Image (cartoon, rainbow, N blue to C red; front, side):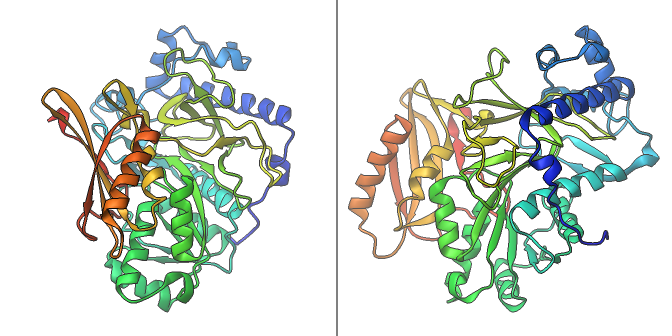
Length: 440
C-alpha cells in the first residue's frame, strides 16, 4: 500500500482552461496513437475510417474519428479465439486484474487491466474521494461483495492510498451491516443511492436512528443516478445526517466524474484523466452548455484495453458555470440525467424512470422504493407507478397529488398504486425499477 498523501493537485485541478484543453489534446493524441499501434481492433477500425493518428491536430479533427459502441466491443471479444478478442494491447502475462460489465445490455464486456491500469484506477478514485473530504482519519464501510464487477474495488484501493481504514462488509446481511457501522463507528459509506436508503430503512426497523446514533458523515454514491436528484439526495442526507456525494464511472472507461465538497449541483469531469464530450445523439456534433446530449469518453491512460470515443449512453449537459471550489474542471449540470437505453417511448413521449424518482422522493409520507410498469392495454400504452405508503399517510390525498405531480413532470397520465411498506423489491446494487411488459 502506498503511503498516504494529499490527492489535491492544484497545478492540474486549477489549470486555466485553455491550458487544460491543450493538455487534453496532447494526451488524446498519445492515447490514439497507442491504440492504433497496439490494438488490432482500433487499427482496423481507424484504418477503415481513413484516420491517421498523426493527422489529428485539433478538437475539430477529433470529431472526424468514429465513436465506439458497446456492441462493437462485444463483437470484437468474439474474435481471435481468445478471452479479450482483438481489444487487448498487451500480452497475457501483463494482465493483472480481470473485471466485467454487468451484462444488462447484452453479453458482458471482459475488461483486462495491467498493473499500471489498476494503479491508474485507484488514482482516479483517490482524486474524487479527496475532493469529497475523505482523509486518513476516515473509517470507510463498503457493504458489497465485489466479485467480478469493478464496483467498489477501485474505491477500496483508493481509500488505502489516501490512508483510510477500510471495512469490506460483503457477505453480511443488511442487519449485520447496520450493527457493524454502529459498532465500528464508520465515518463514511460507499454504496448505491438505493442501498443507502434501504440501509436507513433497515436501521429504523431495528429501532435505530442513523442520523442521531451513528458517526457517518459522508456517503459516496455510484452505480445509478439518484445522488444528484435533489429529492433523493435530501432524503438520504436527512436519514443519515451525512453529506451525500455523487460519482460516475464505467468499467470500460474508468472513474471519470465526481461531486466535490462544494456541492455545486453538478459533476466535475476529471479532465486531466479523460476527454468527455457531450454530443447530439443524431448528428454526433457537440451540444452547447444547457443543451442535453449523450456522453462520449476517452480515458487517456488505459494500457491493456483502451477505448477511443466510447459511447457511454448516459445523458447530460454542460453547466454554464464553474464550481465554487476553484477547480477549472467543467461541471455536468445536475450530473447524469439517465441513460438513453433506459428511455422508453410511451404514447409518443420519451419517458425516463429518473423523472418518476424526482417526484416520488418529494413525498415525505412515501417509502423509499417505487416501481414503474409499462404495459399495453387494448392497444394503448399504460403506465403504473407503484409506491409504498407509510403508516399514517392520507391515502386518498397522496394518490391524487402524486398522480397530478407525475402528469406535470412526465407529460403522461400515470396510474398510481399505493402498496404496504415492504411490498416492493429491495436492491443492494443497481436497482431495476422499470418493467416494460410490452416487450413480453
